[in-house]
Figure (cartoon, helix red, strand yellow):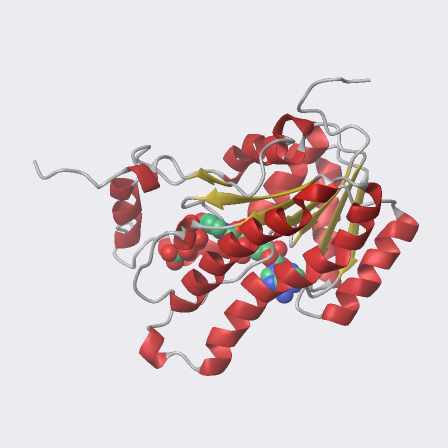
Length: 268
Ligand code: NAP
Ligand code: GCO
């Protein structure tokens, strides 16, 4: 038995949208920290099957993938029942599934704005509300909401995303406030700029072979001077999922290479 403060032995963890990108990296870190079972969902069977193969290729066998859209409240409730029956209690939930739409606000349709809010803010409410009753009964649980630089900062074209991620920060603090007495900790993990499919359009090589201008912008805004790798979120996520963080609640842990601390490079 591993008694480390950071061990996840004896724990089942559900990471939403963990087929690739940040969710996959977090699920992988949980498995490496000894989690008994990794549960994940995505919207297509094809994506699930590919991801299960990717987990297996890393030697992670205790993985359970389910088709479920996190905005579908009925399907989420059914999935929680299925997980309880087929895997066991959900000790750790990571609300990771998310999308972004980069459109100037005055050109964005209400439907586009709403879709981002539904996936990035309403779904964490739906999924958390579905797992909370059983966590309350067991009087323990960890919920980690994947926030963003846009929980704190704005920029052109990401109004819906910033509104959702700002809201997610406050949902995190409210879940902490409302369920802390049940020994449930709800914290946020706020990644900086991470090289994943979501940010691929901002890193694309230009037709003339030059780097995307956004690449230089982000490197200059980041004291670390680079994009971060999804695996760099693994340690902080394990901390927030483990008993090492039992007294940490309602906190947003930014893992941003220093972006939020930095005013930007001074002119030469
Ligand atoms: P990604 O590469 O685009 O992966 C997103 C994942 O979410 C995919 O597995 C996707 O699966 C799933 N997903 C999206 N909508 C879903 C839905 N309705 N139901 C179920 N699954 C859904 O994104 P990422 O960069 O890894 O980002 C993961 C999270 O971190 C997001 O919440 C994102 O906003 C946040 N974040 C990202 C960055 C960054 O720089 N990359 C920084 C800060 C925060 P399918 O589409 O296959 O269903
Ligand atoms: C963008 C990016 C960001 C990141 C991330 C920052 O267009 O500005 O996609 O929003 O994905 O959320 O922390």
